[in-house]
Amino acid sequence: MNAVAEVLAALESKGSEQTRKIYRRHGATGEFFGVKIADLKVIAKQIKGEQELALALYETGNVDAIYLAGIVADGRQMTKKQLNDWAKNASWSMIAEYSVPGVTVESPFARELAMKWISAKNESVAFTGWTTYSGVVATTADDELDLGEIEGLLQKTESEISEAPDRIRYTMNGFVISVGGYVKPLSKQAKATAKKLGKVEVDMGETSCKVPLALEYIEKMERSGRAFKKRKTIKC
Image (cartoon, rainbow, N blue to C red; front, top):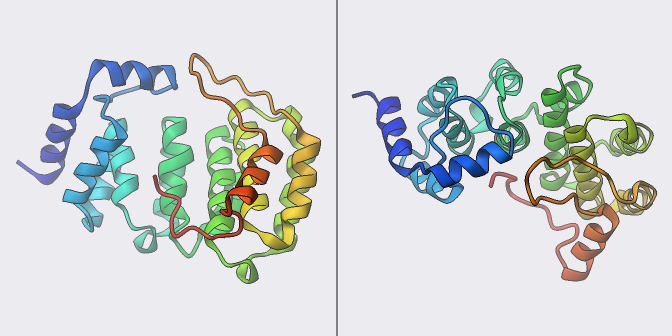
């Protein structure tokens, strides 16, 4: 039995109908076993560092395997083509907003790809771009960021969010939070943008998920002492 088959068997053994129902409510389609994220992380530890296996798991098309691939893969070892392929083939918002950005932010192409994806006509690729840039500002020292470009994205958010599709609105709102909470030189501008945005309306389907109020969230980060403390990774 090859390694991919062994991992798929391990995933299947951890799947449950209850988790499958939850994932369906969150928009998952196609093939998946319904493995909890906590169980995925246990399996990820067992195959840590196996880059080729991670790439092969993404190619299976199985949603659980794809999410697992995002935990295991090292973005520093991935090419632009591989990252672009991952973004284009993300079949579920959880993959597009977590797995692909988590890996891309580790790569030297993160900012470049984020900007490219944000302008994509493909909605899924576009919100992958917004989440990726959110990760860039959360993990990169302020003096290494293009502050002018980020200010431009804040302005773009302010002018375009009301007409944007649901998931793009959601990730734009997240971008404003990330800038306000992690980029000290632009926190004032981000909070001003957040105040103008107010409550961002997003159809979250049959889930209980809510869209955070950007200004409230940034201020909560400040009160808790978490503001401007850069993260090592955005993988979760």
